[in-house]
Length: 141
Image (cartoon, rainbow, N blue to C red; front, side, top):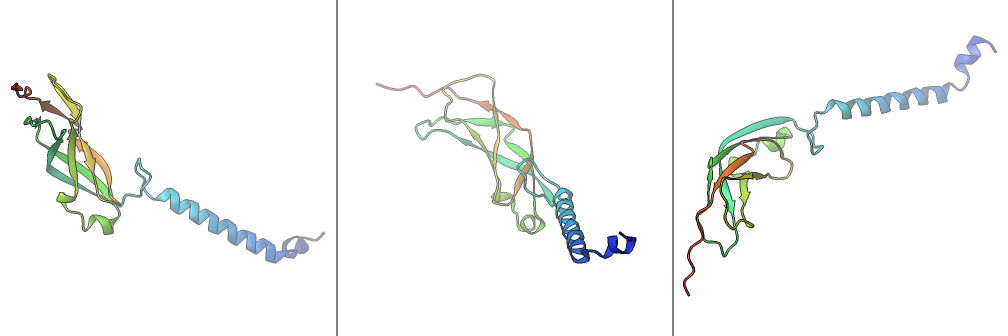
């Protein structure tokens, strides 16, 4: 078999295979090029919101005045540029869940952050806050 036959035989299939290989390589290269977060969403821009108030969630029957220290946290979030351009601080909520607390001393709880769709949490500073638990009110018979 001559060298010329080796190159020109099934030339259409060889060009199609080359095109397919390049398309697959470009697709895989683009996927690996995008920065990823722990949740798998692509992050284009990041924004830090400082001094977000930490809200306390407790049961409806618990009327004690829980307090947290520090009362505010800094939250860094990321997302696609078109989502981040419209993001406001009041769309991000920092919450401490105290629904299962009766009484405690030196209690530290994790701060849960809720974000709008398309926005990914990057970090919270501080990740835990101290909780000041007042004694339960005396029940009168």
